[in-house]
Image (tube, rainbow, N blue to C red; front, side, top):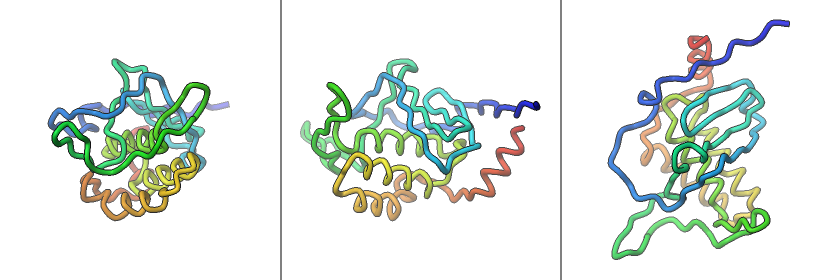
Length: 175
């Protein structure tokens, strides 16, 4: 039985866009995993993001002081009030686990957009995962938020087009 070679980790600095320091709305300090059926056989391993062969995305909240993000964007802090896209009312995800409806979907979406230069995923796939997680949480505005990220995600994120063929080619080059 031959073992498949694993994909080496990329240089983290090449993946993450240097930018200004921001104030984040949420910090998640535990690893969070979700399995996505169409991500099978794509892998990566970075400080905050991991994707395994079976399509499991891991946001590594246990790294350093936790994974921080601003929820659904855009948001602006003005006069000690956060203005912008609503994250929804609190929902019970488990025993004692009360979070806004969009909490986990926005966390996964943000980490995928954060690693857009290196993660083996397209913008469309990241947006579909966001939509699926919003629907799974029972968020009634899931389709509106999905339309928003599809229409405006390229503008706010600067995500350059990356096709599945490009991802496969990058994957093969790393072997």
